[in-house]
Image 1 (cartoon, one colour):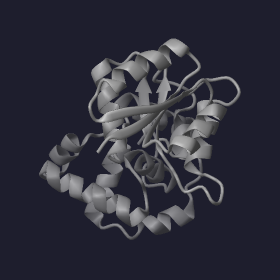
Image 2 (spheres, helix red, strand yellow; image 1 turned 90 degrees about the vertical axis):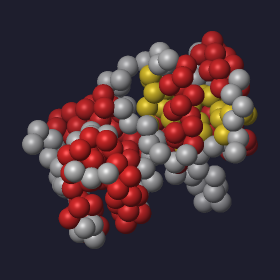
Image 3 (cartoon, helix red, strand yellow; image 1 turned 180 degrees about the vertical axis):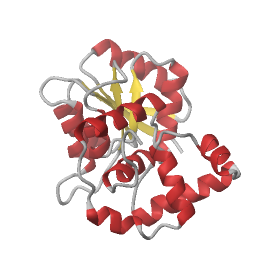
Image 4 (cartoon, helix red, strand yellow; image 1 turned 135 degrees about the vertical axis):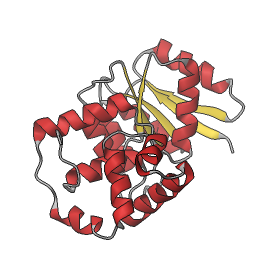
Length: 224
C-alpha cells in the first residue's frame, strides 16, 4: 500500500527537502504541501493523505490548531489523517497539547533521513512515535500542572485486568516494549498483545494516547 503524505511547514527548503526524500521511496507518495496550518488543513481535506507532517510553529495557524482541526473535524468531514509533528526542539512547549489533540508523535527536524522515512511508516501503520525524550517532557508537564484525576477515566480503567494495568503504567513511565517485557518477565510479543487489548478496551488510538490516559486517570503520578 502506498502511503499518501502532505508536508506542512513554513520553510520552503524544508518542504522541498522532505518531499524529495520521501518521494524517492517506492511506498510513499507526497500528494501535497502547504506553508501554514490553515492551508495545511485545506490541502489535507482535498487530498486525503494518510500522514500529515506538521510543523509546530507557523504563521496564520500553528501546527497545534491545525492538528486539532484535522483530528476533530466538523460534521460531514470523515477523513482523519495521522499527524506527525515536526519540531526543532524535543522540549517544545506544545508536546502535551499536541498529544492531547491526537497527534501520533513528534519528530525532530534534524533527525537522520532514515528516521523520517521510518517515522512516516510507523505512524501510517497506526502506531505512535513517542521517543523517551518526549515522554519525559510529557511527565514533566504533568508534574508542573498537577491536574486532578478525571473520575470518568478511572472508571474506564477499571475494566482492565491487573496485568493490562501494569502494562499501561509502564507505558506511561516511558518504557519500550522490550523493557516492559524484561520488567514483567514476558515475551515481547505477549507485551504487544497486552498493549493491543489495553488500547481496544480504553478506546485509544495509540501509545501516545495511552500515556495521556494513564496520567489523566490518576494511574501514574509524576515524581513517584
